[in-house]
Length: 112
Image (cartoon, rainbow, N blue to C red):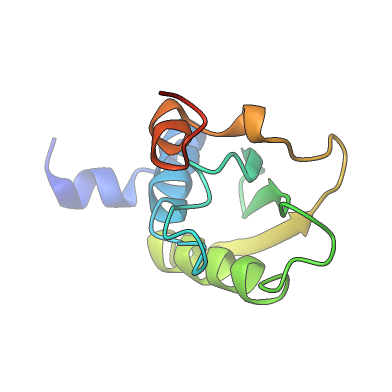
């Protein structure tokens, strides 16, 4: 399958995968790690004409509370042109360091 065919494949799994890949380019400016590795992305759903992202922040008072969701929306929109993108900030369940990827845990010193 060519890259162009993959890019135009409207299947839900493909859109979800592309959204997750795009979200890996959204970096927390303080930590230098992406929102997926940080465990901030809870869910990505393809409803057909819209892709919805549920994500959280490390704390409600996070200094990038407006920046990160806007960057996430832009990244997913760029990866899925023509689709409506909704980024929902959710607080339940609360974020904890247990949600970090193994690599992020090592980088941030949670693993020896």
